[in-house]
Image: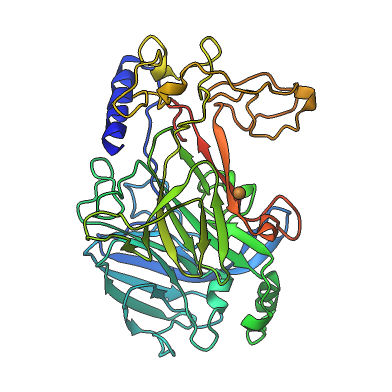
Length: 461
Ligand SMILES: [Cu+2]
């Protein structure tokens, strides 16, 4: 399938050169920050107020990036240096010797840094129960070698009050790129085969008990106990529905820079780095097709050290606290028994996949798919096997395009729809604990996200 995917990419690229109006398709990578000079992060900790969708805000403690301007090759991270929730995603190369200088500018509790699976050497600051910590206006330097690729939680850990700092927002993810990784030529999560991908997304799950934040806002630092904790807001990448669909670095959410809406084209291999940085477990469910679990806590599930062959195929991850699981997801529409692009004459064909230039007339590639459109050729031209009710009998969601076919936009009543201008398929990715689909007891909210299957010629941004 990987080879097939490469063929698909080349095919569309060639056609893009022929058709100048066709959008140039970018591969998606996780947003994050990169070490200055390949070695050094300068983080700081500071309190802030985070916007919530119903109009209130919440007192938080956050990490921010002091290296603003150092990431010129990644302009979306460039200049962004507010304290944030979650903490900046740190992206480093395997084998790098990394230093993280952490300065506490005003969190009224000693702040520290631990990274799952990594032994950090700390210097400076004040002695703590677990590691050195930074009191206000102190700096601690942590050094380590990023020896193993993977996805790892990092967070502050006040030894005398475990759990408080992650609850307050001092937590994020570090991604270690494997040796030989190349954003264009070698997009792999690990060196083992079976971990190659086209699109990469982070799903970072956390939860918050607002009462603890009210107590910290009043300076009642000893009023925190885990036994009284009762989460009421559930986040993906630091946002809740519907805010998590908005783009990265959105001015409405100045302290929540990361979107949580995966996107794909049919047939893409989508790497989902799913991390639970909170204290509760979250059963996270991915509609559409099963995912293949390839690694857990930065270790490939492999029988021979060469191939990611031990992970299971599943649609739900019972995500455990502080655990990361890397998964590959691909949507193809195979065996639906109807044509995802609709019968002839119905479809707004993707620009790279008109009948004149693709083999949608029925010639399958070697694996049964059309090379350009990822149509399952055995279903070519098959109509939807049901008659849709009239629009007056439908309850319309904002993401219904008015047509069951990919790339096709049908007529909608005035004021309906509008959130799906490309005729993509929205498939829900969400927590299966129903209370986690609320924000302050209001549905829909919480960790309710989606993946969008976009027509082949539609770019992500
Ligand atoms: Cu579900």
